[in-house]
Image 1: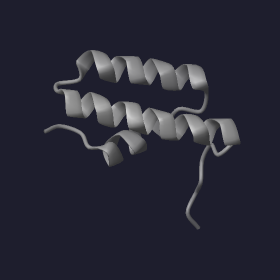
Image 2: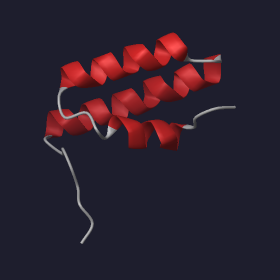
Image 3: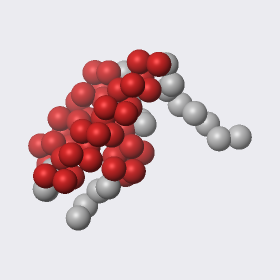
Image 4: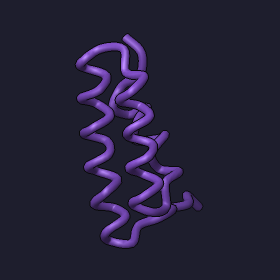
Amino acid sequence: MGMTRDDFLILFRRAKTQDTLDLMLDAQLNKGRCVAECAYAILAHEKRELEIERGLFCRKLR
């Protein structure tokens, strides 16, 4: 299998707006190799969507 949910979470962290996040999801769904990979992308998209709504853009570790 290709990417896991954690991989998608890391990838989607780069999105700072809802529009960018939606474009990234569309691209991943178009190139998704299997149903599980598409499901992981959707779950990660929803998690990042909530973070953007709450204003959690970048958390830097100190």
